[in-house]
Length: 319
Ligand SMILES: [Zn+2]
Image 1 (spheres, rainbow, N blue to C red):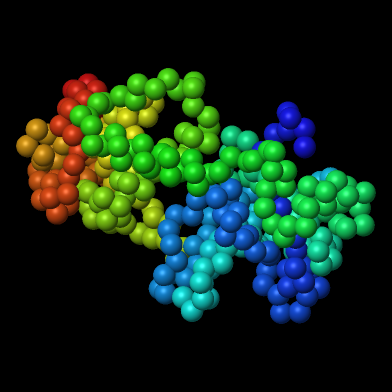
Image 2 (spheres, rainbow, N blue to C red):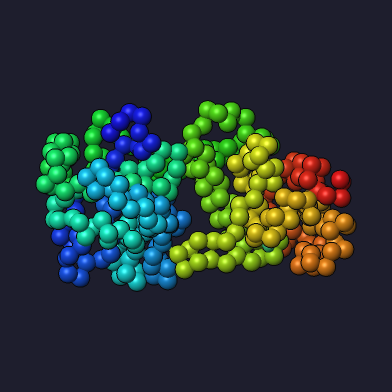
């Protein structure tokens, strides 16, 4: 693979008989072994008996022996068949067009597009194709792994875990409003991992409930509708720290960012006078004066400096 490729270095998987198109009773798609999960997107949760499958959508470019065949929307999922078996990760949906062209022991190369966490290239290499010889030399008898052990792809799981650890450490230090690290020194993957880590820490802290209205719809796959809102926004380098975050439903996040409401020094919700008159805002107006820390079960950890910044710079009664 070229040094200048848009794709990160590939991992591979030798396809088994149960994973190829003409096999009887096969599951759709193919398995991603546990050891390769770290190169795949971080899933938003762990499966349980009530939520047996957790999936994220992936855009995939499907190639056959170096030639582009299809662009599809597929997904990467962990599933437990009703919680009765250990979780298995798979790439499923809309990949049978490629798997139908496979025979047992053909090889699937999996590469992530650089700078993205959810765009992948899946390339089937048939054993009869001239390209197979080079691939087989790198595989050297293994069933799966990093294709060329001299060229290890970026691990999204490691990026994510590093971001979570960094946020945990930062949250034990005195609070700062702004992220002092220069934007330019950070890769897109790191930015995305930090954003995911911030989201997870904020939503977990507030039990996946909007701090203003207690709502929090979830999909069957554990995806939460909620936003982890930055009080001092990322656009002005607001820090990824749970003390600079609020779990908010989308309407309340939108209204917070536009300054329709703020939190005063007594931790009461204050709705802007110029917005309170508008009849469409009644679901916000009913929250005026609500004691925010008590409403969210005394879990409010938003830092007073962050809330003050928001009141001064965003609250629309000031404008
Ligand atoms: Zn809400």
